[in-house]
Length: 275
Image (tube, rainbow, N blue to C red; front, top):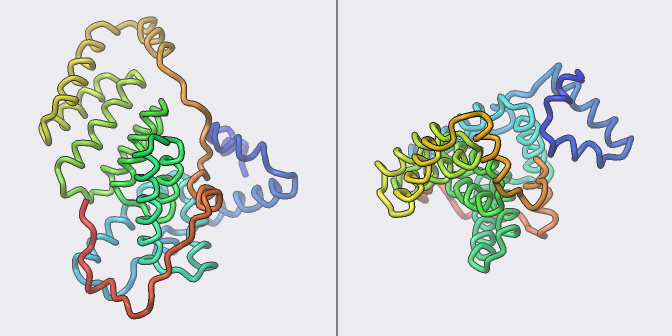
């Protein structure tokens, strides 16, 4: 593996490496070297079920297309490969992964209602690593904002929009709103304004109007590099670093079990989800 690949790793990924034993690190390096020389194809890692009715076909095709775009990032490709191993080892279907993710999301919703944002975030990340859906990504972004993880909030709001599965304009507006908030805290005011304007067009709301006013004020008052630095230095820090493997590890840490769907259940007779 080239040194450049290591230097380009996120701080979270580098933290994972620093905690590995020499033997585990050696295996990881061999694995990464093979990944560089012979990267797997996303179509081999996420396989759309056969003989789907139109609604489910559209749904799975969009998930597959999302993975194909996201896997241009090496970490996501590794993540997807690990996910494929879980399906193989546990003998799970994609429908069972989908149902498992719903259960994890519901646990996250319960934790969020109880005010335990950190636990909710872990459930949502576990759900996302099991089967990605835009509603869960929206929830990850919401939790990330609560914990001052602004880059994470921007990333997951962007991923939610990238899936192209929103049919509910209010939910789509939430993704733009949360990305606007994240970009505002990251000092990307012009991009934040673009997002907040889209959110306002989709679903006008008092919170959206208030945030738009805040962004417009920042554009007028934070102009020079020194002013921007002062603004960024004043942003709150997150409570701690999250690993890029946090979602899969969370499934083990939280004691979650994958859902087993009886053979007599035919998902093809059920309407696909809407978001």
